[in-house]
Image (cartoon, rainbow, N blue to C red):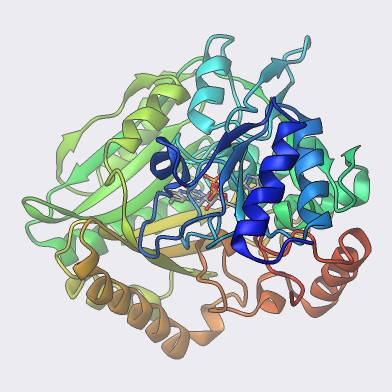
Length: 463
Ligand SMILES: Cc1cc2nc3c(=O)[nH]c(=O)nc-3n(C[C@H](O)[C@H](O)[C@H](O)COP(=O)(O)OP(=O)(O)OC[C@H]3O[C@@H](n4cnc5c(N)ncnc54)[C@H](O)[C@@H]3O)c2cc1C
């Protein structure tokens, strides 16, 4: 068993000699820095090495090798875990990005992809066939990491969360075998993803959609708080009156721009009936004075590409979330004050996701617990200067705590695992109620008794 770093390096090299198809990027290799880098670079780590498997058998061999030699490993795809969890000091990084095959089934109702697919590439391939699958707003996120832990995004109110669209998976399990996930394993994957294995293939539903209507509507924000309150009062009325069909996703942001703080609303109408979409969007535009409107007919692939240009290419910091059932007077007032004191630091932002329709419906074939209509408030501290992190994160944490203290009845116990700092909220709350969490722990003990996937999200068992 390898114990020192040198011994681990040496046994890895010996292993790779008999597996020449696996790409090996050692720490002194020319591409090591760029390939091991993550999106959030607050706590840089140096993995033992980066390896890029090309097949499911390569992944199986790597898992078996690591287990036999007590070498810790992480699995990385898009590198967008906000807390940097896909890279750990001296652990082997299994980089899945070469496994990005795309196979659309003949009936055009599903697509089977390699476990290392990024959402932008998948959206581009599906667009050529007039199809979409639910996605996050930013194309550089991995499909597996996004969908298996939840998968919030602009098509969720129409088609459900990412995890609701998972039909099947091929997994390298804790024994290092490639298996087709059965009903029980699939249930675990839908919500707890990589804690149950390395997902080498995923099959997800696809839907016919040639062009959506999507873009940003920016409202006059010279008097930001009144503009924000007017927008939300009007939006809540539209929701209550059933005037926002499930095809329309509305994600509010308060962002820092060179001109100051602004109310920006990302909208996506996911139907080819653009006449109906324009009529519906007119109701959103009427909620304030529009100063910029980029909404246009485009493919989902174009939309997720454009959205990436609005954020820093790499970031420092993190984010926090809290889920509230309703838009109460109390929450609304706390947010108004919080937005007023939001630091004017680029990358500090507030965002509001909404779960309704199929995205809020219980899914008994998943371990994801937060299934009732709610708003996810996101306090984003993904700034482009390291020295700005503290102020930005303190703002987000204090605002979150204020809502928790002053409007507790309105707060759901669970938060979104992908946007929750490790240890901030107990996993028993995230995966609760209690019987569900206990069931998840029992399933983890059954499928991974030795905790082979101990570095994966979420960390269900003690190492
Ligand atoms: C800028 C930004 C925007 C985001 N926007 C959204 C959003 O709109 N909606 C939303 O729901 N989430 C969003 N997220 C969160 C994101 O979906 C999750 O952090 C997701 O897990 C990232 O996946 P990844 O492959 O890109 O990241 P990675 O860091 O590569 O992976 C994250 C974790 O996923 C697991 N994993 C990845 N690939 C595999 C695999 N093939 N097999 C097994 N386990 C695997 C591993 O445990 C790994 O630690 C965003 C994150 C960022 C940084």
